[in-house]
Length: 160
Length: 193
Image (cartoon, rainbow over all chains, first blue to last red; front, side, top):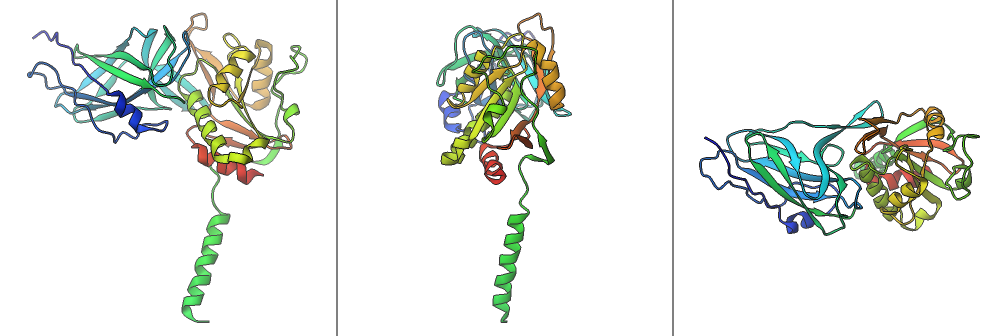
């Protein structure tokens, strides 16, 4: 069966704004994300999506919590956005006192699991922004899933 | 002495002991050694306005080596610095907060200064030149280098994880790991004096 539907995730600005602080607590209200097709067993929810302010041409990072409430695992395999010239999932690691960043080609979201993209860990890189991101602005991007779906995310920019 | 009094004294004693042994949030550098300079002698003519540790003697100085295209660790650290500064309140006047770029290909001192000011208007920034990078990294015993293809615009830079704290006498006293919250940083800075 060819799955052509798009899962539409809406992370309400109010939720992200209500979280406060620099690091999401992950205990805010959830916005359920369901596909249009009842046949899908993947149900993903996005909460606490926020991005860092950055100038046009600069790099921003976005963070969010992904919850898979379905019975089938899925995997994030890429990022698409109109907001930046390039976007990717990256991971920060520390090795012998030095911080490194590397691209994450696949980010599994197991069935029933919650995956947090948070500061000093996994994050969405928005490279060479096409316009500045100021506090209060919303930036949208799509997480490409191995299932063929695209999970749309709206992240609110917060002052650092 | 009646038992309740003994219990009271014991509890006060234990409480004081606990206070005395309260751990630092950062890593204490003991013995404290003179902080190396943030410039390399003789490799470049320094603009008079550029930050130097020698000019900051008398102040506690926080130093973080990063780069302005850094989207995750550097802003997390500088946001924690900003919280620390707010937590210190009036105590903050003798503290200087300095972001040092280790990405000479993309960052100028002005870029680094503008980046630091986004987090707090009092934060300072400077950038090492190509010629300064190797000697400064060697003197500080730290590593920083491009990862990915530095001919492309999207390379990242490996850089030190910790913030360094230099005391008013110019000695390296603390290394603060990434992720330490602002109020904890403020606590360490107060205790350092």
